[in-house]
Length: 502
Image (cartoon, rainbow, N blue to C red):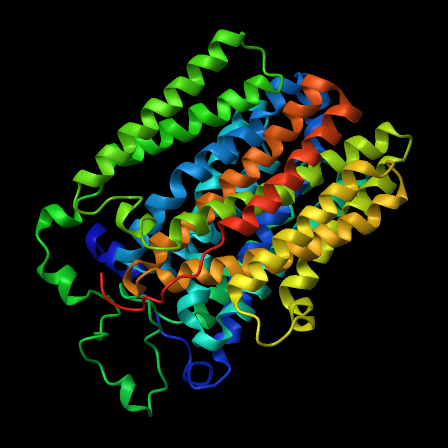
C-alpha cells in the first residue's frame, strides 16, 4: 500500500454500526464520546500544577523552569485550535477527533517515561497537539450532532464533563503523587485515550464539510449515497469541489502570526508573574504581541480561507460571545489557583483546601447538567447568560470579603453554579450564529477563547499574588473578577441563527 492509499484510508471516515446509527437516541452516545475528550483535557489541566514540586525535586530544577511543563502545553494549544478547526472542516471532524485521542495517549505514555525536564516539556507540546485536535472539534460535534432543541442540554453535559475533570484533577493528582509517582499523572491518561478511540470509532457519526451527521439508518431514504455523502466516505460540498486551488490553500502566514501573538502575550504574563526576565523584556513582549495581532487581522482579511475567519467573528453576537467565553473560563480558573493559596495561607491544610476549592467545579458541573432546570422554562439563553454572570459576580465578591476558612464554601458554590449557567448557554448562542459549514472553525475559536481564558486566569492569579502578596493580592484579584463577571452580563447579546449559507 503506497502513501497516498494509506492516507486515503486513514482519512476515510467509517460509518457507525447500523444498530447504533438507527437508534433515535444515538446522538447522546456521540455526546458521551465528546465528553470523554472534555473530561480528559480538563483533568490534565487541573492536575499538572500539583506535580510541579515533585518535578522540581526529581529534575533538580527551579519553579521558573518547571512552569514550562504547563506553559508549553498552553502555548501550543492556543496556537493550534483555530487552524486545526479549519483543517477539520476539510478532512472531517470525526477523523481529527479520534486522531486527537491517539496523539494525546501516545504522548502521555512517553511523558511518563521522560528522562529529562526538557524532554517532558517537548512531549507536553505534543500532548497539546492531540488536545487541540479534540477541543477544536468537540463543540462542533455536539452542536451539529444533536437536534436543535437539545443543543443547550448537550453543551451543558459537555461542560459538566469538563467540570468533573477539573474537580477530580486535584484529588487524583494528589493521590498519585503521594502514593505512586508523578509519572502516573501522565500514564493515567492512556486508558482513557484508548477508550476514547474505540468510542469515537463506533459512536461518532461521519461528518462532512457542512457539519451534519450523514450515517442515517440504511433502511431510511437519506441513507442512499448522493450529493451529501459518497460511497468512499469522503465529503466535499459543491463549493469546495469548484473552488479555485488558491481558496483551499493553507494560511501559513496566519498560523505563524497567530502563534507569535499568543506566545508573546502568554510569555509576557508569565514573565511578569515570576519568570526571570527584566521589566523591559515584558514591555517588549507585550508590544510584539500587539503588533503581531494587528498584522494577523490584516492578513486574515486578505486571504481566501483565513484561519480565524473575520467574517465569522464579525457575525452579530459572535464577537461578544467569544469574549464572554474567554471571561467565563478566566473566572473559573482564577479561583482554582487563588483558593488554595488563600486557604493554606490562613492555616488550612493543603488536603482540606483542595476539597473546599473542588466545590467550584462541582457546582459548575451540576448547573451545566441539571441545575439549569431550576430556572423558569421560558428563559432564553441570553437571560440564562446574564443571570449566571451576575450570580458569579456575587459569589466572587463574597469570596473576596469573607475570611479564608470553610466560610468560602458557599461563595464557591454560588460562583460555580453561575458559571455552569453562563458558559453552556453562551456557547450555544455562538454556535447557532455560525454557519453550519464553518462549525469546526467556530468551535475552534470557542475553544481558543476558552484556552486563552484558562491561561490568563492562571497567569493573572499568579501575577496578583506575586505583586501584592498572597492575602491582599488574592483578594484584589477576586474583587476585580467580580467586576469582570458583572461586565460579562452586559456583553451578552441575542444572535440570529445561521444554519446554512456562507
